[in-house]
Amino acid sequence: RPPRGLVCIGAGQAGYKVRRMSVRVVVGGAVFDGGRLLAARRSAPPELAGRWELPGGKAEPGETPPQTLVRELREELGVEVEPLEPLPGEWPLKPGYVLRVWTAALRSGEPRPLEDHDELRWLPPDRVDEVDWLDEDRPAVAEAVRRLRAA
Ligand code: 9L3
Ligand code: MG
Image (cartoon, rainbow, N blue to C red):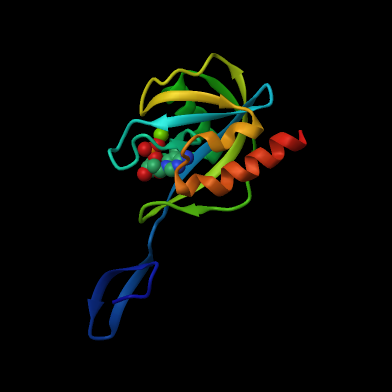
């Protein structure tokens, strides 16, 4: 078997040929407005339903992370956001996926749970702990709140 992170694409007497496993990026948005952070409660899949996240989704081939974020938040929440800065770090999700997070400012629209969410909340920094965040999102939420407090 090839080492972790590599996939076998052919084998012969000489050994095997490998290719680096491609990892798909999921982009989440730490959306700020009026000194508060937007939290979204997932309605799917069943194992994640009821947990809260920084809304976003999978990058399509050729997209930059800011493009993914703008598209996903338009689709999921019906809003226009302006991506601001990437948070340092990358957090593993299910196998083959990693989470990256950008801060973003709400530019127009009022977020509504159009797909994949059933509740949204604007949380001031001292209330971010009142929702049950997905474990993978917690470090990014903590960093987003530090920036919100410093702003
Ligand atoms: N995910 C985790 N934290 C987030 C986001 C936006 C997504 N902040 C996980 C949940 C799914 C996968 O990434 O397993 C793909 O997300 P989506 O396309 O279902 O939103
Ligand atoms: Mg999504």
